[in-house]
Length: 286
Image 1 (spheres, rainbow, N blue to C red):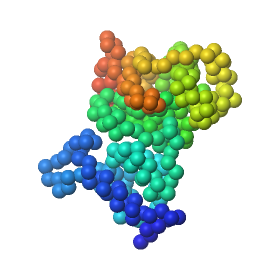
Image 2: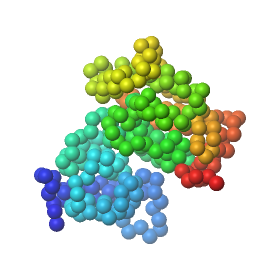
Image 3: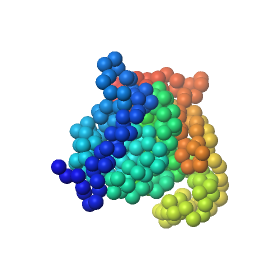
């Protein structure tokens, strides 16, 4: 059995994963305990489910075998096991991976924010960075606004996709596009100020958008700034049609992450439409 890959001790990695799994109760992560449970912590198949991995793959990891896990898989495991930032960093060290930079798709999400996200099972909700990179989302958020793109650093930012990929704008009515373009840029300027002028991630994002998008450049020159704490949105769903929702934010202590959740606007047919979304999830309606 292979226990080392390029200096990585897979046995130690597996032992650490098992120790973290054993301490978590199913109720801590929104799973039913069941009447015939033989272990106090999570089962391997439950961790695999939470991390989006196959049971065989996760089992091999705990046994100290298999391939070196990717950055994306390590981030998913850290969230599934509710690791603290120090524990998350330790997991990456054991796997021989560099600790992800703050703000990227593999960034650490506070366990309490993850717990709250999973308790909002009947409400579309997701955690994003201040640069609009989606870190984690629940089933209904993926069904409402689409699944997060594959992790690609700051280019996974929805602001980046808004100005470089016209297809990303399809979730908003065409007549609202100019409003959101201005809003995203004003919010990005606020994020830049909070991070400081020497933040490499936000600097690279702004430089790339300035080079690629005249529309972004025009809005950026206006120096508008507005921190988006809540918003009333009109969203276009491919099956449900137009929905009017309230988008609310809960910020992390440093302001770099936000828990977003969506509620239907009172007095609109969006109440019934979101209830339908909760029933069918991402399945196409007939």
